[in-house]
Amino acid sequence: MSVKLSVSALAIAAVSATTAAARDNVQVAGSSTVLPYASIVAEAFGENFEFPTPVVESGGSSAGLKRFCEGVGENTIDIANASRAIREREIAVCAENGVSDIIEVRIGYDGIVFASQIDGPDFVAFEPSDWFLALAENIVVDGEIVANPNMTWADVNADLPAVEIAAFIPGTKHGTREVFEEKVLLQGCEDTGAMQAMIDGGMSEDDAEHACMSVRTDGKSVDIDGDYTETLARIDSNSEGVGVFGLAFYENNTDTLKVATMSGVAPSTETISTGEYPVSRPLFFYIKKAHIGVIPGLKEFASFFVADEIAGPDGPLAEYGLVSDPELAATQAMIEAEETMGEGM
Image (cartoon, rainbow, N blue to C red; front, side, top):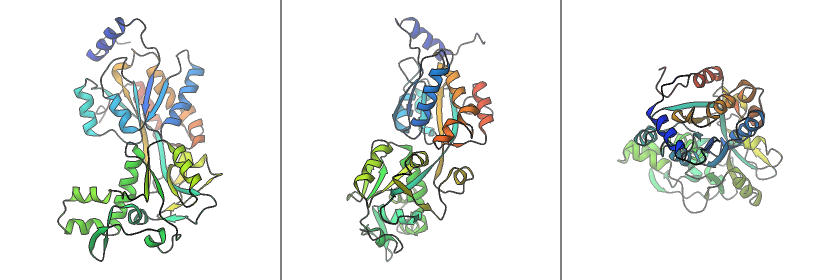
């Protein structure tokens, strides 16, 4: 073991020395998408190691990373789960608060699916343009940018059911919302020509992108601030509703939900891992390196999380719906070497 401690590690050790009972369990918070995977791993870790079972909380990717970047010390979390990559401005906030060495761990992939009641209207095939025209605050009609007039899915696309638009989408604090905005709404905006029309009308590209991802507020689209169980409850109570879910959650609820294709591709572990399905994303967790060696079991938990037996194609996470990362071995080696972001590039 190296006897050279970083300043951050020394600071954390000093805090521990002055605390009556040092924290002995790993603390994790963040993405609601990563939550079930992290919970499975935490429980198995507690059962198979001498360390206490890690405490895993949800709250969303942005909220988890905000807590992660609050500083170094046992009163701050050790790991942030995220269904998107950490942003440069978040890295900057971390650095300002002394969290300078961050280990990024990609655990696998998840896909965002569009599902409805299994016996409900015939929602079986969508394009990004359908969702943009259904949910955007403003769309282009006859060359003019107007408030979205579409009331039914058939107004959007004659091939879709003639039922009132009722979409249940993740709230803005979830990484799921961001990938939905970027890969569905923004893509649909581009596909319909609306984005170019906005730019031609004098908007900057950034303003046009923001406008493309602005969602109507007249009740046709409902933000869900809780996890997917709340979305499912809304679908259960509205036979004409369509919800945005993670693939893993959908696959565990196929008795009540049916899923639609996006751009002609059905979501599955195979189409997501190959990149064929257009609305998918990698899942991550971020480790505070300064806490390794100070918070008992932190490195062991991280290594256990990405072990072949856990995160590999035949492990329990795959059974729950995670698409195993083909580069898992490199991730395992990176954790073993405690390689931080920016190293090895």
